[in-house]
Image 1 (cartoon, rainbow, N blue to C red):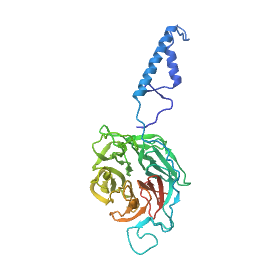
Image 2 (cartoon, rainbow, N blue to C red):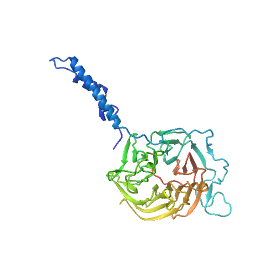
Image 3 (cartoon, one colour):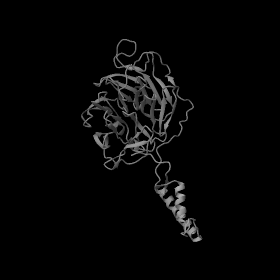
Image 4 (spheres, one colour):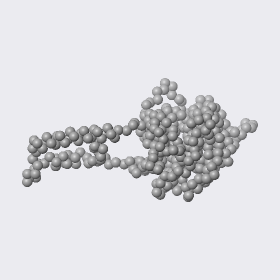
Length: 414
């Protein structure tokens, strides 16, 4: 269902009625006496009746407007006041090779971190934009050379233009958007906290609601999504966005479980594919689309809950997963919020909320062996490969957007 509405329509008394000229013509007709001529004849009694009707209509309109009032979105657009903004460019103290790239393989010094594909020679971790409250959900659009990402509390989707380094607002309000991805037709897919829905931004700019209910009940707060080659949209639905008024609107969950869903590309049917997560979070697929990776951040709900990445065997054609197992454990109290794959099947994930020395990005082999870390001076929420060669890793780190050139290419399509 599309959100498009004709500019020629206006909301009157809770309904969509014609524009002013048509309304005036309708009112004129109602005040016309039949005199056998084409000219209207207005009497005093008729005018009084018309005035009374207008007053009554105004009352109905006001009552309807009051009845239709809605809760505002979450925290919206209050500027972040800073007397000492974070510097942009290479981080202070950077030198080649960048010491913020740490290989898991220990040994004698080499030209860059040994066996760690984050290293790309003459490069270092850079801060490319700053001034946000909680940066999340990055996705790269190659056709325009820009990155979109959410600032959830400020209710914005931001745009970082890679060609000139300019940052601007892409959409506000964004319904407290969180995760974003791109489908095979180049359209933006967005998970919204306030809207409690998944939407698609069409190529003409209109917005289509992909999913907002399951079994007649509202979703919790969709968090992250991925699109498979057949056009199916897979998304996670934890309860973070309805836990308060900062990143959404506080509300009771209507779904009994925190599910992972699949939206059928042909019928639009929404079905549960996984229902045993405490809090499912970031989601991605392997480059051959045979594995599905999902971050489990249930540790935020209690110390006995897990903090890890799970991996499933993925059957795209059947729309099913199987053989769940833990892919990688996170060092509690840290959690991993976002995850991506490169073209060789390595898994890159965010780390934050725990030991500051663990803040940043981790890289694993497809078998779950830790290859190395990228240290970032802020809690990291999510990440995405971008750049014209898909070899620049963009990292959403709390108040800032970071970037680092790697020796690999991201697998995200198109």
